[in-house]
Image (tube, helix red, strand yellow):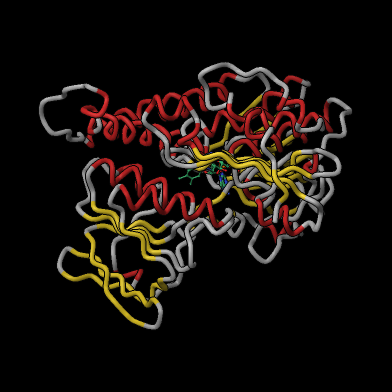
Length: 459
Ligand SMILES: Cc1cc2nc3c(=O)[nH]c(=O)nc-3n(C[C@H](O)[C@H](O)[C@H](O)COP(=O)(O)OP(=O)(O)OC[C@H]3O[C@@H](n4cnc5c(N)ncnc54)[C@H](O)[C@@H]3O)c2cc1C
C-alpha cells in the first residue's frame, strides 16, 4: 500500500526545505525525505563549516601578523584544533537543527528519514514505505569524486565530508586537486600550522579563471609556504608506515610526495546513481546530472530536479535560485527561468575572489569590442589600511553597448564588493551608472567607479 501526497521532495539541501514551505503554504500535503544530515552539503560539510574554519584560519593569520599592526601578543601563536572544530560544529549545528526542526514543525509536511528511490515515475520508496505524488522534486545534491588512481583504496584519505571530523593538526596535508575546495582547505590548514602540498594536474590553479587570477592566487599561497605542484599527474598512492606517498609525474620526471594525511578534492558528482531514475525513465547526461529545461522540469511530466543534481549551478545560491524558479512558475504564475541568472560565485581563500559574469578569456572569445579596467589592490586605500594588498580587481565592458560583461575582484572584501557590479548587470544598465555613483570612503567598492573611469581597449 502506498501513502498519497500532493508533492514529494527528495533531499533537504538548499532548495527542498524552502520549497516545502511554499508548497505547504499553498495548501499541499507534502512528504520530504532525507537520508543523511538535514540541510545537506552547505550546512554540514560545505559552505557553512568551511567558512567558519576559514574565519579561524584568518584569526590565526592576523594574530601571527600582530606585530605589523603594533599589537604585542607575547608568545607564538598556536591553534587549538579541538576548539576550531567545536566552533565549527556549533555554527553548523545551529543551521542543521533549524532546518530539521523547521520541517518537523511545518503544518502539512511529513518528514521521512531514509534513502529514497523511484519505483515508477510517481512512486518513491523509503525503506518499506511507498509514497506517491503527482509532483516530485529531486534535490539530492552531490558528493566528492574519488578518482580511480591505483593504490588510493589502500591508503586512508579524507574528503570534504570526513574533513569535518578533523580535530587535530595534520603534520603534512597532501591535497589532490588545485581548485576551489582544495585551495580553501589548503590555505586554512597551512594557517593552522600544517605543512601543505597541493598536487594539480593542470598547468595552473583553478583553470576556469583567467591566467592572471590563477597566477596571483599561486603567489598568495606560495608566500604562505604552501607547496604547489602544477602539471603533476598523480600515478599512484601507497602507504609507508604512517605516511601516505603520492607518486607523481611532472614534465616527464617522476617523484614522490610524502605526507601524514591526504585530502581528495578533485570535483563533485551528483547523487543520482542510486536513485532508481531508470525506473522512472528520468534522463541524465554523461556525468549523471539530471537533464532539465529552463524551468527545471525533467523529461518526465510532474518531476523536477533542483540544486547541484541538475548540473546547472553547483552553488548554494544557484540551488536556492532553483527553488525560487520552481515556486514562481508553479505557484505565482511568474515564468522565471534559469537563463535569467548571471553566473556569480566566490572563492574563499584570503583574500577572497568575487566573480560575476564572463572571464577576460570568455569576453575575448565573443569577438566583440571589449574594454577592460584593472586596478591592483595596492592602489585601494582600504586594502592598504588593512595591510591586505594582495590581488587586483578587473572589469570587462562591451564597448558598443557599454554593458558590463564580467568582473573579478581578488582582494580583501572582494566577495562583497562584486555585488555592486553584479546588480548593475542585472539591471541591464551601462557601466556609467556605477562610474558616476558616489561610493563610501574608505571601502574597496569606492575604487570601482575609479577603475571604470580608466578603461582601455582589450588588446
Ligand atoms: C567543501 C565545500 C565548500 C563549499 N563552499 C561553498 C560556498 O562557499 N558557497 C557556495 O555557494 N557553495 C559552496 N559549496 C557548494 C554547496 O555546498 C552546494 O552547491 C549546495 O549545498 C548544493 O545544495 P543542494 O540543494 O543541491 O543539495 P545538498 O545540499 O547537497 O543536499 C542534498 C541532500 O539530499 C540528500 N539525499 C541525497 N540522496 C538522497 C536519497 N536518495 N534519499 C534521500 N535523501 C537523499 C543528502 O543527504 C543531502 O542532505 C561548497 C561545497 C563544498 C563541498
